[in-house]
Image (cartoon, rainbow, N blue to C red; front, side, top):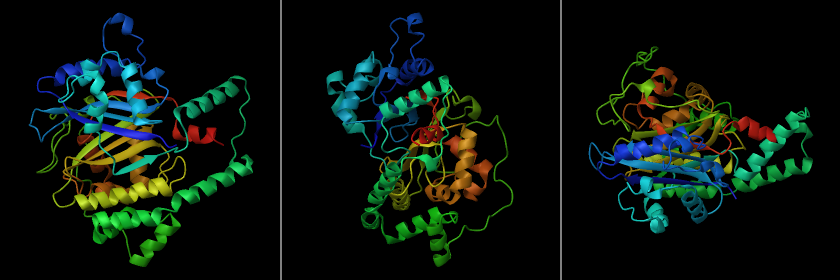
Length: 406
């Protein structure tokens, strides 16, 4: 069974934002609980004993629909098994549920946690899983085997040609079976979003993907290509001291405004990083966004090989959600390496896909992802820092896990 995902957005009670942040931040700074003895009674979530959570995060977002000063709590997790089991485990490893969830509207008591979560849970429009057949236990066991062999100086050469032939055949058959429902996906997308949105969204995604034979053929057949650049120069200047602020009329900053960008985010603590983005969708464009998301979701589920999303091999999980009745788009990603290298890889490998996703957002650069400095400023301006970020295998890259399967 493929890992599942949970995304919860819950309004924080007025006046409780700082108290909640003061609870979450120390947990995030001490994810393994090594300093609990120095802070007796401090709430903690013992993620390290979890058997089923791949990645999890807590973040505090702006809640502009409820008021300029209101905030909301984001909880996101990718986990194995059923939702009830995940919630039971989360409850068991949390020392003080009231200190976190009790600061949210509509939360009453621990016994009603399941119904509270279901009320505030959101389904993604698109969800990519690097390893659909791998549980936390299987990944951790493979890592342990590799490290044991390395300690013994017995590191086998990882060559695809030496894989078990039966395993290789089974993988190909499995991928073929996964791809069969793609026609049904197309009919559902058209019924929901309309033919025009589906065609424009799909062509927008594949315009720069001529390296893939199928997409190259479609681009030539439809004379589909990237539009000419409006300028040879970037639309932004490089200013590392700039503060977060809306980029255009109608735009919003999803976190604390007027703070220096580079002092806001905590990154590069482990091999992996997290990215949470919230952008504002221009009125009348939500069906276009949903069509693009549906195309990405179908490709991710039906065609993407293990560990690669159209050539990007640094993503463990990524999901997009249309929230707030279509007014905003949220991205939640768990990835390898630095933020800079991650965005550079996206801009190089799926340039037109980035444009298709965010060209309907306020503040997106006129030349889109080809203007890399402006793209990075757009993304940083709409990024939400996580108070807590947990990985079950924090030193393992996607490439490591692929090699462990060979």
